[in-house]
Image 1: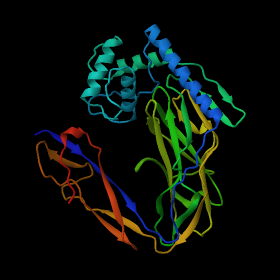
Image 2 (image 1 turned 60 degrees about the vertical axis):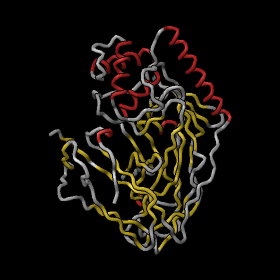
Image 3 (image 1 turned 180 degrees about the vertical axis):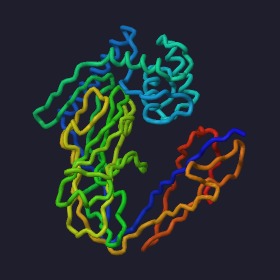
Image 4 (image 1 turned 90 degrees about the vertical axis):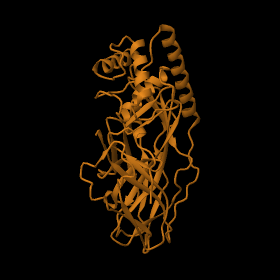
Length: 382
């Protein structure tokens, strides 16, 4: 029998009622007129460049450093970049990249290969296709410069065929408020402290690095972890903070902003227990150099700064403890399931509330193995 490996990860979203602490988002973000004008000019430049390329019969290919071959079943930021390229070329008819290389991506890639004289046009993204994409990106790249405006808006351009990107504070950025410090031995997890909007122009932009700076009457050691999140999904963590700077880096991409769309990214922290009350925490993106991407330009009113959070002691902080109790058949390599098998138990866990009643609003199960999502159906919780 054919076998596939399934690995299931669990994340939860909870609502916790806490005495003496609350989080309330407010609208607080603005961008300067100069930043808006620059972003509009960059969009016009990209549109004119696309028209010029079309007139010359040149394909527009976003610059991305592909380091592996891709085929049906592949997943990751490189698949997202490939899908965005195929969408822009008109070969992949989907609304947005999915990060999963499936039959539609294979067919679209074969069409692109045929149109760009890549042989064989089989829908396999190997060394020949990677070299073709690299050569096309290099042919359409431009020399970079740096310009600083008089109002504090910095625009940085780089050699890339990707469009420009605008960064700003999100409208639902967390307001200045008290944040809980647990008197017990457990750190308080995932406290949102800064929300950012990353907006791409006419082509997708992949962000591979982001430096976040901590300031305030506090110390690096106050934090047990710092996270980047897309909605409720953690996309990066950083356990190490040096001189107030938290560095997030992933050569394959921390996240991708699709063409003509905005991606909200949340910076969240975990505060260690046993601290004194009154410490303050503020987080910012200090300058354009704090953002690494393949964008042709990054515009913003730097520094992009969140509101000040103040530590407040809480003695009866509500919490939720999740304990793994996987089936006896599991192993470190996952579960082995025969194709066609039904009603198979793939995971078990218990949830224990602490100090207060806890309301669990959602549970997300993530399949990270080699099996295609379409090969699994009828998930059930009981």
